[in-house]
Image 1 (cartoon, rainbow, N blue to C red):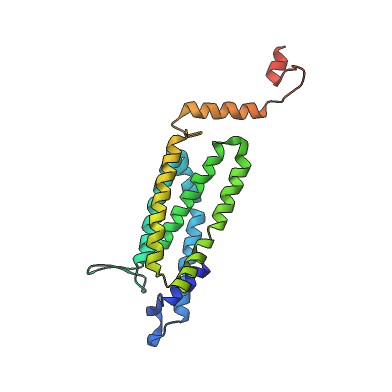
Image 2 (tube, rainbow, N blue to C red; image 1 turned 180 degrees about the vertical axis):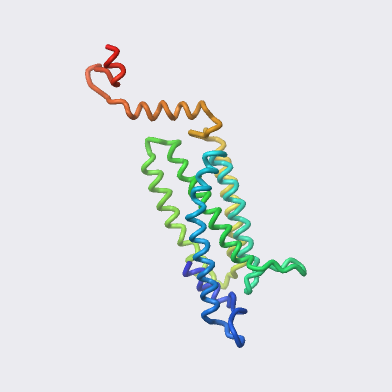
Length: 224
């Protein structure tokens, strides 16, 4: 959040909240911190709903919905004016920036849960996949740092940075949806065949492997 905060302060974001034409004031900082706090809270709270949506509709639709929230949020951030509103002709949409940050928070939660789902596709590498997903999402915080570097060193505006990121997001969402469509939906509620296969795989992992042809399960041992 800090690099984005610096970028917004460079553009005198929410300076309209300051008295006497000042460009920096406590009221401005409080409002910016409120945006961050609300987005962080919603990211955590929305997790349960994201997981339920993933179970119901599968990874491809979860990526699609996350992409919608993400792109809409990025465009709202990109096009909002320094007072936080979005002007469409004579229409003023207040707190568009606030809504945009909330939207990318929800989209990020949906992306995260769809990524964790990949660990059920390649179960032999489940731990590595979960660790990689966690590392990548933690590392994604560098995005705003890169934005601020480009802004401060090359003069790229907030609009240019976030519109470009929205375009990249659209391309990535397309690739992810194609990838999930090529991979069977593991454990999906509407796909009993793959769910059965997953159950069999879990049972196989729980079987006790014994040497010299001895029975592998208690049921087989009792049968003999």
